[in-house]
Length: 121
Image (tube, rainbow, N blue to C red):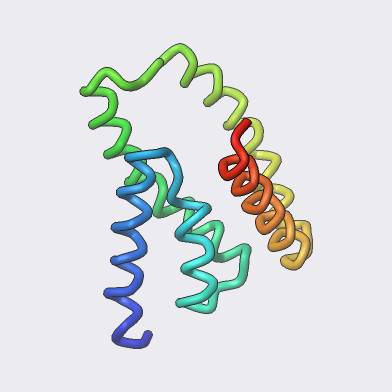
């Protein structure tokens, strides 16, 4: 591992954690592209590694945001129920789809979300 990769990835983690706690994005939007560009990971390894980064990051963010009263636990439980099923399907598809298809789906998702945020509702 190159010497510069450690501080670079710690910086990526800092940005992802800060933005994740502030506005709810970070793992997929920041960590996945960074891992692909800086560490040379393929899309499957980058997304899997990003998930491992998200778990402790979001646990801390949830703790702090919960203490602030900024969590609607009822809505969170409903979304989480669907998210668990979606995660099972997504993890299965990540293992069977070609990396190029996964990468293009990720790029399309980022483009659509970017356009939606830029143009408004």
